[in-house]
Image (cartoon, rainbow, N blue to C red; front, side, top):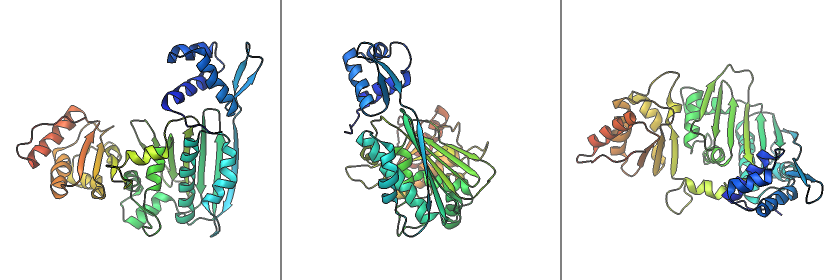
Length: 352
């Protein structure tokens, strides 16, 4: 039977799994979380029942070990008959084994979305899927031999390069086929899973839940196609519903809130100082009711850059709420000056 794991239970089980094989894991877990040894033993038994741990010996001298890791690979020919839900049901879900139901829900969403993207958009001939599972987490890769996701977005959306394609994907609501897709699949998948990486063409993009940085690296393209790497802890309190709600203002599921990782607008050692840079940051954000500009990894911005976003754009789109986050004192000063210029009588607000 699958179990929904609450945040505290997730922490306890992760602690146990990371420390299996070390001395006195039961006592250490009990002390660390301020719970009884009996409570720790219950978590241990649940992990055994779910196949994450192997147990040997009697009750008084029981020894635990991590279940061995394993992997499996599949190859699919890209035809009109290939259906992502059938692949999930027949091949992928059975291999995942017993996992908490919220984790299964995340995997169902993430895998079927990524496989459907490859089916509908790659223009390739084959798709290759690899599933690797350990006691701690599970990883799935979905690779195709098509045109490459960033190259296709760049061409069909008229963007200047693959880097800009990644930047626009990170905002959400971007698709090259609006009749069939809403542009939400990659965005929500990247925020549901623990680790999300795309390797395509000359660019590698990495997003990790809880990390302060998204990474975008350029490299020499060595083959066509796209590979998406997904990773989810086997015990986590995240869920599909929590992720969907976190990007909605109000009680609906309209996807009216987004986070813009401003650092992805930088090229090399460039600083963000111009209005043209700001306009790239602002592209399509009018589609949302609330926009959080995450300045993690950005040391400074110029007055023109701040003015274009927080005065010019805001005056033109008064119904869009703009919220800066992870700003240093210098950036806060630039933003405050721009807001004051656009709102006479404005008193300085606290910007995070």
